[in-house]
Image (cartoon, rainbow, N blue to C red; front, top):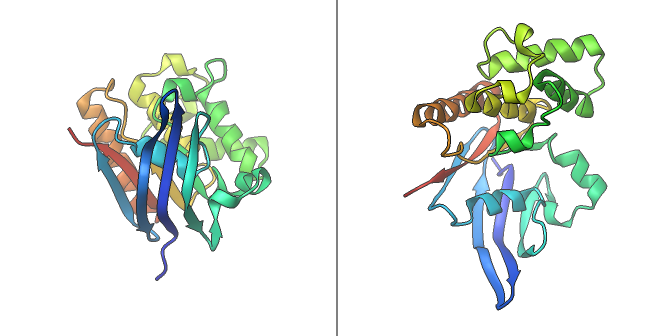
Length: 215
């Protein structure tokens, strides 16, 4: 069975006043369908930068120096913006680590999940609401039909993180990329979220890349 994603000699560099420094230097790995791959490293080792690079989300002064990211026979690093829109979020989804920053504070979280659904699928308002409730239940939010009118600031940190997971799952991606839950969350909540991701990976049969901080 061929890998669903093959990363070859990926390098990401950042320009500084004294020259270039490498945040990621020659990382290579293969990810197979329905496989869970964990990237382990100390804080600041380049795990998050690696994940952002896979989706072409490195902003200046950072840049991808070299390497390939092969998915479905194409090198993602060569895609134009239109092609990226057909991959990013739909086939490969990223769970934002900072849920509070990722969510729009003036929109209910139910609406934000619904919008993620309608971006990728043609759904009626009723269908989007039903799918939103289903997704929120799947990520462990109780009585979602009564909570979808709440705003991000009304949720706990753990609940906000579950909402970002629901948004990432909206398009039923083949690959889900997740950074470790923020250290600001209680250790038990962090463990619950990681267990949730592993459970979803098994239920949905998607491939999962999970970053993990090793002290």
